[in-house]
Image (cartoon, rainbow, N blue to C red; front, side, top):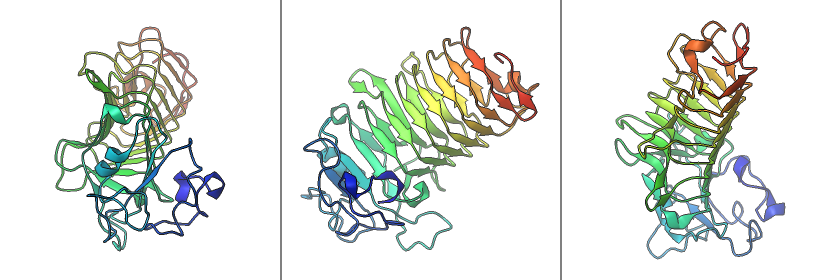
Length: 315
């Protein structure tokens, strides 16, 4: 089932070069993957048999039509996984399966510990857009959610959309989430966190994000602390990693190419402290390092790499 789902030794069928839709040959041999009692739910908007009402979502030949319906069927911390079928909504594709996921999904606090996984060899094979302007494709209010293998996009005429946002506060507990091997393309925001702690964001690609690729919102007046952000790629984003006032974050081995004369547009932890920022690859010069990056008072920044040499100390 592509790069994001283990092989049949973990309970899945033999790997396929590309999974366009679900069938008995590309689905699950057994339920041995994950903890005992875990369930697998299929979502494929491009399948003519797809339906939400009355559908348990566990038969790959009759998948669910929406991710929201699959989330509703998941149980908290049972190891349930939602598998998203591939589509070719990408603008340069032949459009044999042209319908992207088009939802503004909210994962409630009662659905912690679930996984949402795109079944494609490349995240562009599972394209997702928000349901309306100024909304997020996925809003996380639960803990321990994992999201991988999806391309979050903002096609015309949508505006102001976000890929993923995690929110803690009140009845929300949107922290400890993991986002890996996803693409974020042309959005206003890639991943935003609001008082969400212990999140892991790694091996993602952020391309031409108009406002901020990874952003600490602080709407709750508290910071997104203790995050681990590594091995991501940023191309021409207005802000790459913008985390003012945060503490205890580890930010390392990210690749950032963009306006190298910008103001705090590469990595920003100003106002925070106790962050370790190391081994990042930056398209700015050493002289521009203090302009494109900003440190917190007790941060440690070491061995970051600029276009003309390595840095010494904090920016």
